[in-house]
Amino acid sequence: MNDDAPSFESYGISHRGRVRRLNEDSYLIDPESGLWLVADGMGGHDAGEVASASIVDHLATIGIASSAPDLRARFEDRLSRAHAEIRELSRERGVTIGSTIVALLVMDGHFVCLWSGDSRIYLVREGAITQVSRDHTEVQELLDRGMISETEARNWPRRNVITRAIGVSDEIVVDFQHGEILPGDVFVLASDGLTAHVSDAEIEAAVVSATPRQVCESLLAKVLERGGTDNVTIVVVKMQGSRNGTPVPSTAGSW
Image (cartoon, rainbow, N blue to C red):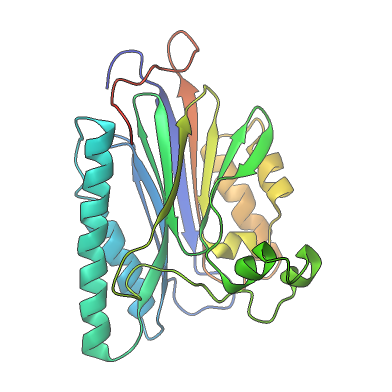
């Protein structure tokens, strides 16, 4: 990275919760490559753990990209390899195996968030939180169509049914959002084990004047205090800003 590139402080934590026997979540922190991700495996009988680990193992080989398009291409290549590996495992075992994914890529003052499933990424900027990702779930589709209310969605019986994941269908479908990094931006990536117990407002409050490690530990404590009904994984990335305190102009081209 160039001398004016923003520096990152990041931390991740993962816990099986208070109910589940295994932790099928995985995460990756690779600031040198400009990559952070959370994967939430599904499939039971240890298969979910294998699926999320496959994604992390393949993405861990992403290396140092020469440009934003190169970083995006490397990400998609490794994700495709993991997808193929998970599909083969599904065929061998005769069951549906897969994993959600949410990832943050950063290069030359810009970011792109990519996701498939219901793991989420939030951006806390100047004290205000925004959910960057949009859940790929049945309940979100019903909300989008105006068929149920936000209140009904919170207790919807099929609220955890996801409509997309890596490894569950022939093709990979990943949504993305991109933008410019500002000094002080904080990204929070998490599996749904966090958002099942902690509100957006509580995530925002936890981020204020805290280090990424403190944020992760305080949010995990809240989840466990409230029952920890699922595996929970949290990755927090804080942008320290450039030397002159302004956004860094992009020289990498379009994502």
